[in-house]
Every structure is written in structure tokens, then in C-alpha cells.
Length: 426
Image 1: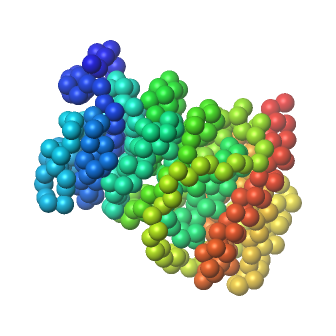
Image 2: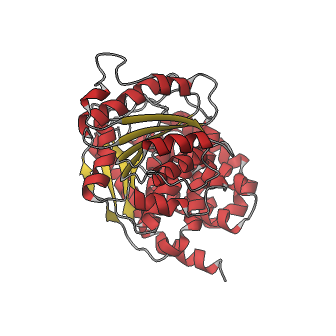
């Protein structure tokens, strides 16, 4: 039976529900906030996955809602597995399937929802847990099983997703977060910021013991922190292929998203510095199942528009960049920006130097941290625009090799970053 130990994260009602559920084998958690347009397909996929792939397991779906005013929690409660002929009914399973929807309390943000789901998973002693993104369509029963099975059957502690997508898509990941995290942590993770993952009870217990939950990182950067924590603390990790999910409507502007993701990555590197300062190179992370082969289209963003803005922004930001960048890096950036039109190229080595110097400036506090991150945004757009212009129309394998080359440049420059990081401690 579930322990009745008091925990302020769980209401009496939720504790009552969990006691009724008892121990479970597979728990799927879905944090939500006004996801009425997408939640039905997510819940349907969960029930299909339970029935098809875990019929002998005791399963539970927990929805932790952040105060939706569009009826999302009611949809979770009402959308059972017998609502249409495409959904496999619960009666086909050999064990009871439970469904719980509960509000989470505290500071708004996904971190609180995830903490509540993890606490419920610990209380029910779930063997394998999958966290899903409610803000998408197209999630499948097979994808959910792909996150759960490596934990349940192969004793992995953390499972990151791999999506089948065009290499020019998701430039914030491919141009910045992936190569930075790979060089720092020493593991080749395709999607370090993914909101979906699978994990073990051992990893959940560890996460709940950390002091991240009441911080800004816990509020807006929990996805990145979970990945970094799994890598930095030596948990057995792998990747599993998922069908790409068409995203729902954007919930934040580019500026807000950029600041949240970049600031979270820099905060993670600060927290995990004792680990990554001792790492060299990178190792491939096992992919236990490849993503389903799905045709993907390249993005339609115009690179020329981004590079034109970059040239203007460098001039306008010079007085700020002088505090962040070395004289050599700033001078090189200005030369690059002066090459208008098709001649503008933002080379890999310059981008690596720029990112690392921003990281060092963020850590040393040369100015307010949010101002440091905001100043990086136009440089990122210039780099992205240059890359899109250079590789638009190129074969996917050529683009992938260019991205791999960028990652290797981040790794090659890491010793200099470590030296400068350590000097700042003296």
C-alpha cells in the first residue's frame, strides 16, 4: 500500500486517490495548463499504450494541472478509454488502469507539476515513469512505450527522446544547446531540452532530494536540469526514437523562450561544474530504438532577414558587448557583420568563442544576468541566419555533418573555457 507519510506537495484528496491505487508498475505523468485543444489525443495515446504494451502491469495516468480555465482537467477525467472505437478499452487489460487529475500548488511553472508527479511516483513505488508533453498533437502509444520499456525492461534510469526532424529545424537546439551541453557534459544527447522523458524510481528519489525545485531553474528550466542531472550524477541513460509531434500554438515569444532556455543551460552548467570541468571529449549515448522513418520538411525561415538584422544589432549593442566579449572576439564579430548580403558568414570558431565568453560573463556577473542573455539573442539570430543561408537546399546528410563539425569545435575549445573558468575562481 501507499505510504501515508505527510507531504505538503500532495493534497489529502490526492493522497486518498494514491492510497486507492496502491503500488504501480508504470506511471505516466502529464503536466498541463490550458491544453484543451491537445489533451484528448494525449490521454487517448496513454490508454492505448497501457492496453497494447503493458496489459499485465498495474498502470496509472496522473495529470498535474497548473490552474487551467479551459476545462483541461475535466477532459482528462472524462476521456476514458471507451470513448470511441479507435481506443482500446480498459477491459482488455489484465490489471486496473487508474486516471487521476489534480491541481498543483506553489510557484507557477512546470517544475511544480513535475515535482508533484515525481512525489506521487515515489509514493506508489512506480517501477517506470514517463513524463509527456500535453502541448502537442500526434503523440502515439508506441512513443510512450518507447520511453517506458528501457526503464522497465533494461534497467535504464533516464530515457531521452530522439525525434525524426530536418537538421535545419530547431536551431536553438542544434546551434546552441546541443553542442554546448555535449561539450560540457561529455555525452551526445540529441534533444537535451525535450519535455518528454522516461525515468526510474531511483532517479526520481534522487531528483526529489535536490534543492532545485524552489529556484528559477526549477520553475522554467526543469527539462534541461533533468537531462543535466542524469548525466552529471552518473545515472544509466539512453535515447529512444519518437514520432515528431506537431506543436500546439506558441506560448511564449522568441525573446522569452530564448532567455528561459539559455539562462537555464547556463544555470545548469554552474550547478554541475564539478562534474563537467573534469570531462574531456564526448561519448555516444545509446539509442535503444530509432525514431520511426517519417518524411520531414525543412523550415521556411529566411536566413537573409536574420543576417540583415544581425549587422544592425552589432552596431547598436557595441557598448554592451564590450563588457561581455574579449576585444578580439568583438572585433571579429564586427568584421563579419560588415560583410552584407550573401558574403556574410558567421564561422563556427567565432560562434563557439562567442558562446563561451557569454557563459563566462554570465557566471562572473559583469552585468545583470538577464541582460547578458538578452544580448546573446541577436548574435544567435545572426549565426542561425548565416547557417540557414549557407545550407538551405543542401542534402540532409551534408547539414548533419556541418552540425557535427560545430559540436566538435565546441569540444575542441573546451580546455580554454575550463582554464578561464578556473581562473575566475581564484
